[in-house]
Length: 272
Image 1: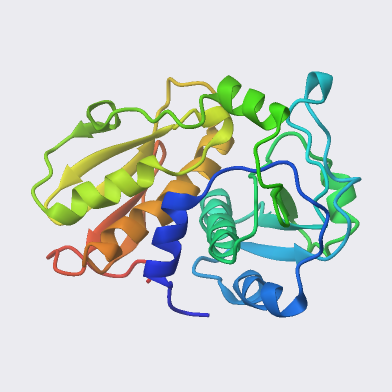
Image 2: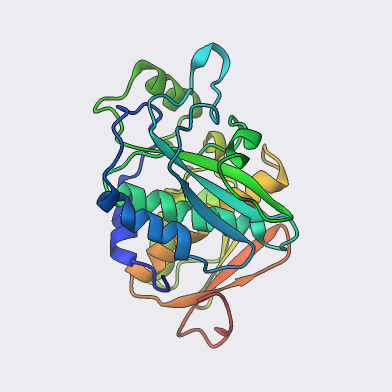
């Protein structure tokens, strides 16, 4: 799988919401086939991959205090894996993992990023890890119950998951000189992040959007890099949906990467 299905995933990015309670039905093989293709073949960056696990995820998940946030009824799950020796493994895992989440959303399946409250050892029993690889996060996959449960509503209220920081707070430098830049940033704002901390920050330049993370905000650097990898895909989808092809160039921390439009004089190399 070489090309991003821009329209399909861009629509899914706007529709996606975290779901934690499922009805237990196992999706048919033909429904899972496109998701399996994304897991096996979508490798835009080295150092990360995804695996669709057709095993009960019960032993993998653990809930928060009082059971709030617990994953229930999911028939299978996906694992997002990074090579700990890769320079950009965390960002790559976020980018690839969100591709899996958006494909599942497009297929009508529920998902939920889980990076803290799961048992990596239990997941590793289902996935053949190579030397140096680590499972950074997982997501349940299945048919979510029709209505949000009380526990799901509680979690959404706790994390304020529907609230997004205003653009003025996220853009540290520059102005929107090209329409695709605003579309890209608005799309990145919709990206999920741990406890909705939204660590991404943007700087705008001629034909480019520079993505970095907030050094002063809560969370570890590693978690922020994973979150920013998720935002990278959203940003690229917004840019491409607005007609701007381009490529990524990774940068030094606290920078993450710069997306340069294909028409930018500095556009060269990159991942795509």
